[in-house]
Image (tube, rainbow, N blue to C red; front, side, top):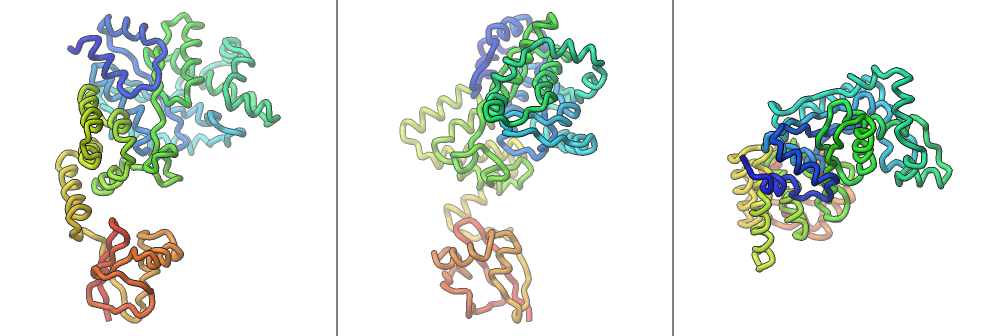
Length: 397
């Protein structure tokens, strides 16, 4: 059994803010199993590394002996979380919500311990509230309090419409905490209003207030914007091990420690040693290789992590061609390099192919090409695009 100080050190690793930390310490001292809550909006089920920041913290709490209750917001999802939105969210159908929830269910257990996780749908209790219950719920807060939310305030001052039903989203999310008697609720810093509403509502219902733990938003591979699939600066947890490793190696040096804190289970004391070694002049590339391996190991196991690292060394440090590159066949009389590269998603557009050739970024059999016309065809052609991408083309008559 870890000491209370050790538990708090692990719980607070990478945390942006914790409200009710003293209360949490008191609960930990009782030795009881705490209920850790996370609400998921099932409107966006594709999980990348940015989404795992909160899940990874819950896993650390599970490892300390506590129970996670993951609430799929099938009922609240039909309203849509208005957080950060400049206009009313389009409501999802029940069928869409259920389908998205199934996808989430498959993905979260890539991080969480299933044996210590309870999965609930908030329609289980929210759909049973009668109008009297709803009035009682609405009476716990004021319009002025709701307008403290930045998004609501902005829409109100700009005369943008706000649906009455949108005010109920934070109330319903807070009621979830009442229903399961949450001891801790986790979320991103953009969920501050909603999570603190849970503390308020628990007091109204004569319960101990949950500790709210806010995790930072994770910058993506560009080091600027929040990790997002739409921006392409993400690492997907379902991606192949070699892709995960290579992407992790492109993280900006200044984010190395943040990634260690937010997306790994490395102990805080070990992270301090890593930080110290960087400050003392250790090559960031060496630290980043350890980080990349740590990330891959979490989702693919140690063997694949080792293989991904070996592959990276062969390609990017020794300059060797990988032996598992994509292979396609092409007829000699219909050979079209631009079409092959774009259709196989090695480049985004024909315009990009031309730009790469002008910059000397495409090689055929290790010879840089300067134009698309008059390419000499061999039976087997290894095309290299930039430093990282390869494709083998087998020419057929």
